Length: 305
Image (tube, rainbow, N blue to C red; front, side, top):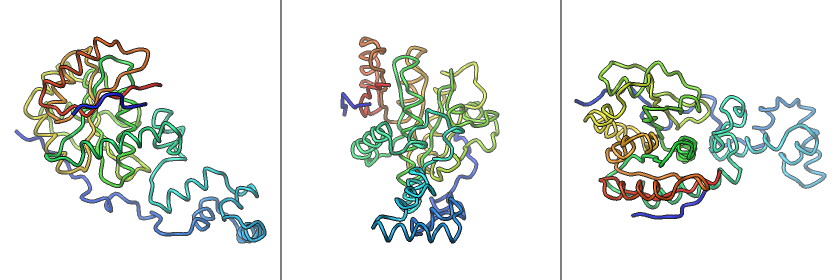
């Protein structure tokens, strides 16, 4: 993935954590030696620990390297220990459960995850430090461009900075974030916008203490009308008061004007196109439409995968 173009009545939410500390499990690891983290994770016996320490002294290597060399730990175990020591949350044990799309959570040291971190750095400099604060709508010209994949992984890397991050699935036409994160869909955004009293609409993502998701809930018959109502803009403002970063997934532009309406109410937009698939004229039209809207166009991402 690469950035190839740069461009410069209120709904009620149920309580969310007031600080990052509120989201940390009681068993969180703080400032423990890597050897101790590996020992506990692998349930090493005292004899095994002595064996690792002896190998470490003889070879002049680190505890983790010694444990791997002796077959008592894996490279993934060492990476997990490092992530715990440096307070860098990811989900190495959730690869099957979370699926292949959340690469920044399950493969945080891959080249794809590094690309997302590079994009995050650009957004932190160009958008998220600006005033007034804005939510970021992720938009694309057509279905299959990778917009949902991109929004989910961007939300993960933003949450790994430590600030509370909310991913809102506002694709009321074909929502998928509940599938990506395996969430219950009985309540969500559509219920809030239609005025129903929804409970537990914001879901916490396990193993990623700073990440939350607001799914669509029940897919409505009138998606554009719901996001055009004042309630959606009021909701976004309330969410910006409760979270450090708000990322909003949207329907592809080919399905209507939902995405541009959502982007205008979020305050900022990032366009995702797909290499070898997105049509240039559709991409140009979408960029032109957003450039003429109240939304700040943060840039265009070319998805190579």
